[in-house]
Length: 150
Image (tube, rainbow, N blue to C red; front, side, top):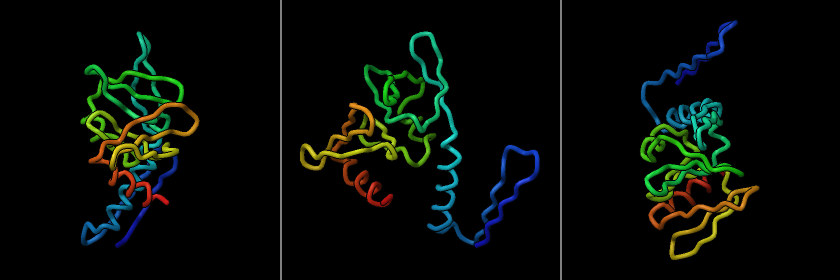
């Protein structure tokens, strides 16, 4: 495998080229890591009343659906978004993870997990009282993802 990074003067973008004879697991991890770093700067449009907000994804704790609307929760606020959960799941960086039919979490913001019913749990986030619920189906994959990060 050969990795080449080209950066030209006066450009705001850099090109990263990874050349490999196979798309190995290692190459996929590198692609994902680069995409995650780039996406930290990514912003989405959120709405509250008649006002549009352009917030970095890093500020979002979780997305959840309620009454056919999708809401983004930050530490202090709740914003509406025009995306459906399945659309967000496809476009969000790798540090977001689907954890139920109605929620996607920012795994970097998880402070604690409290197991409630068999194999499901409540997630708490640092610096806020907000909580999200993880269904039985997603509990083990979330726990594994968090263990990977350690």
